[in-house]
Structure formats: structure tokens, C-alpha cells
Image (cartoon, rainbow, N blue to C red; front, side, top):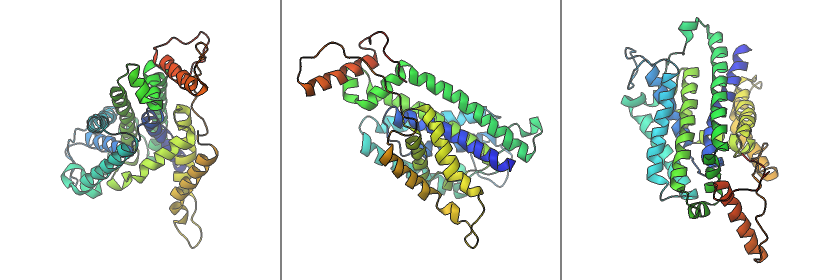
Length: 349
């Protein structure tokens, strides 16, 4: 029972980290990153090969640095961030919305095929295995003891990353991200470099993805290409939409409901007599059903984003439809710091 409970606790905190990374890209900046799971995989692979010593036989991989935790995990996060920067430089200047999403999901498939077929890089379709469990020998942990310890450690890491992300989203940088999401043309007209803002969002979000992937491979001890098919990205998107895009606390609620209860909990339920494994086959179907219900009845999510309300700056003599456009531009200018909001204005996230 302890194994089952703390395994679910680990996935809750790990997908909380992953959802926060995607939230800053899509929920805050509007980047439809369908290749997100690819950056998770990069973090997992680099963490794994950085943690494994060079004298392991029977496996094919690069590096073999034997780095301890947390250096190997940080290296995985930096690797995912570096790849995201390269992808962003190629795609973000010329592509937006639907076209960007199509290119990114194509890149995800390219990454998958490359790692699946190139044995010399990450051991091909077999992937990495026998990845060392961090701090096990130093602390003298048993198998169950490691699961409890690492689940709690992941919780601490997720808390630290939530504090960092909350700080970012309350800062002027976070307000600029939301301005680019809401109207990148107006944000550019007010002097903001929208490409640089999107680039920063991709880098920060992919670093979170790499950290989450690094924790994932160290918890399970193995990782292979089947663990990061493009469909996994849509599970993280489901966490985002169900919890509430643009709100970090919504990411925790979404990770609890979608990833923990709908995806991983069914794997621990007893089989239906005469139909072994039937429950696990319907987990993604259940996620899709919940997603459709949420989009129909509560598209803002369970914990919606708190919107900053800026009071009207004077009375407009324009027609009603033009006055509405003026108020929107003025509010966006205030969010970017071009206009000082009135005293007592509610502070949004």
C-alpha cells in the first residue's frame, strides 16, 4: 500500500512541475507547444546518461559522467532549455498559433524517430535502464524507503519551483507574457519585443520540463521512446485545461485530478474478472471525456486565472465599439507599465 500511495504522490508533484512549465508557455504567453513532451524526454535522457557511470556494460549511451543528484537533474533542465532556445529561434519569428503547433508536433515526431533508431545516442528503442537511484546508498534506503523519500523530495522541488514561477508571474515579466498572449500586435506597438518575450517563455517552460523529466527517470530507473509519444503532451494539456490555464494553483488541481486520479490510479486498481488490463485501456478515453465536459461547462478551468481589473481612465467620447477598443488598449498599456494604474487597483497575478 505504501508503494502505491507514494507512487501516486510522486506523479502528482512531478506533473505539477511539468504543468507549470507548459502553463507559462501556453497559459501565460499563448505558445501552442505540442512538442512539450519532447523537451521532457531531453531532460530525462540527459539526466540519465549524466547520472550513469562510464563503466556500465551492456548499454549504449553517451556522457557517462556519474554526476550525483541534483547536478544531473539540473543538467537535464539546461539541456531541455538549450534545445528549446534553438527550436524557438527557428520557429517563433515566422510562425504563430496553428502553424507553429503543426511544426512543433512534427519536430516532436522527428525527435522520437531519431532517438528510437539511433542506438549510439540513447540506446535506441530499448532506451536507458539501471539509472542509479539518487542518494540511496548515502542514506541506506530500502526499495520502499527510496519511493517514500523521492516522492517527498519531488514535493520539495515542486514547492521551490512553484515559488519561483509565482514570483515570475507576479513580476513585470509575467504581465508582459500575458500581454503578448492577449494581443501581441498591441504589445509590440507599446514597445515590447514580442519575440524575445516568447523566447524567454519557451526557455523557462522547457527548463521546468527538463527538471520534471529528470525526476521521472530517476524515480523509475529507466526511460525509452514509448514514454514520450506525442499523446503524452495532450495529457499535460488536459492537466492545464482542467486545472485552469494561467493559474499555477490550477496546475496542482489539474495534476491531482487528471494525471493522478484518471491516468495512474487505474493502473493500481484490481482487474475486472475475465478482462485483465481493461481498466487501464480506458484511462485516456476518460481523460478525453472529462476534457470535453470541462470545455463545455467550465472552459476557464476549476481554478481560473485571476484577471487584473484596471479602472477606466477618463470618459471616452468615441462611439461604443471604439470606446471598448480604447479601454482594452489602455488596460493593456497599464499592464505593461506604459500607464500607471489608479491607486487601489486590484493586483492580478
